[in-house]
Length: 225
Figure 1 (cartoon, helix red, strand yellow):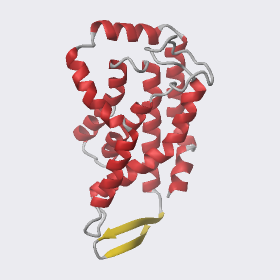
Figure 2 (tube, rainbow, N blue to C red; figure 1 turned 180 degrees about the horizontal axis):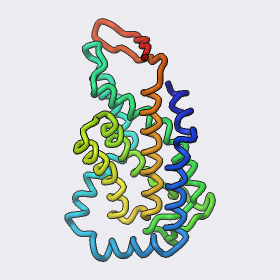
Figure 3 (cartoon, rainbow, N blue to C red; figure 1 turned 60 degrees about the vertical axis):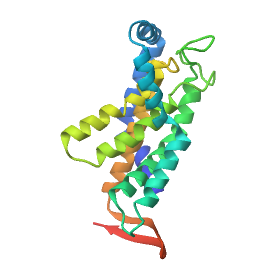
């Protein structure tokens, strides 16, 4: 399954959103738009209330914490020997993180820009100049909501979950830890990763999933057709 996930992530279907992310980042960072937006937000929008919301929202971007939640959900969802919705969400979230994390690290270094609260502060691309070119908190924080959005066909819940997926990224702008361009790249990578896993799930073939119950441990081999 992990091989199929990688194949989908690096397929032509991921090229368009990847180019959009890179293009948006390039436009925002190569002009004064990033800096102007950052200054405008900090002056006109940021408040004690937004800081309080941001403090909660950014917890979704803590990678070790969220990976623990995913694995816990996967195990709890299999207690009775059947793969529940909770287990499916946990599995797909782990796979999305695994497939998207290496490209995230690569973009962070390749773009090489600094944070808005760094000295000097600049969102301009500077290959290997720093490791903040893409927001890791945004990437990690968007995954659980985007995965959940793909698991429902109801329009309102799906739209709500997609909207919520942007909140961890917003918290980084609010806290002055990332420029808008860096948040855009992080969110787009999360979108591409979760879409890749979703496409893998729609393919025909085998699926292997672990079984964890009090009296039985092993693997299920599932043929989808």
